[in-house]
Length: 256
Image 1 (cartoon, rainbow, N blue to C red):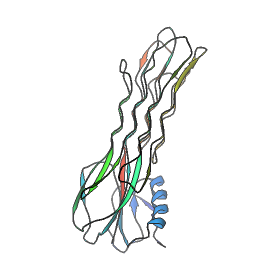
Image 2: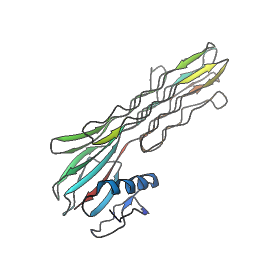
Image 3: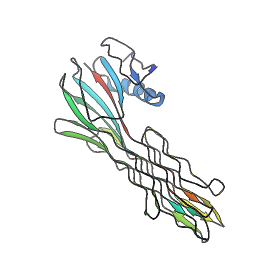
Image 4: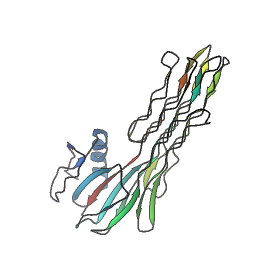
């Protein structure tokens, strides 16, 4: 069993082939990686790092195994407008996630894509924008974690109404472990009171909270990484945009 544990918070990787200290940038991810180290049971750890930008990186001189965990982008929340009565849009879906352990070549560049969060919908658009997929490619195998769908638009009115949230990202491809994102919640209007839909959760990020008729406004943004954006709530004679979905990420660990 591995005795290593991640204990430090930093955005830069710590390069030390014999170190028991690894570095990533988020406490939730630290907890996740420590759990996964027990299950992986492979060679000595070289480094761990969280990728949030860029398109490629190179393995170390002694790296032969590479574990990657991908998080897709969250979908944007739907827009809402007031017309005679309040509007209450649906939340965006959370991005999906997937992981895989690869055999790799030392000192070799590998390409990846970081999924982007979808923009919140702006009326008269029918929905928020879908989040995009995170991908990681080794040789001819590409692991893909799709993004969440956008939440739906709500026009104002006085009748009871229920507005759909966006679907969570569908199951990943070429991953050994993974799952879809959480769906965005629906917005509703009843007896003149409205509440927008919250964003869907992801593996690494919470969906945005909802709004209601006493806190009308633009939808809240999804939380890093991959959370869906919240739907807008319009109860004051205005039109509001949905909240943005959060970007995805890729977490990797290199082993000898």
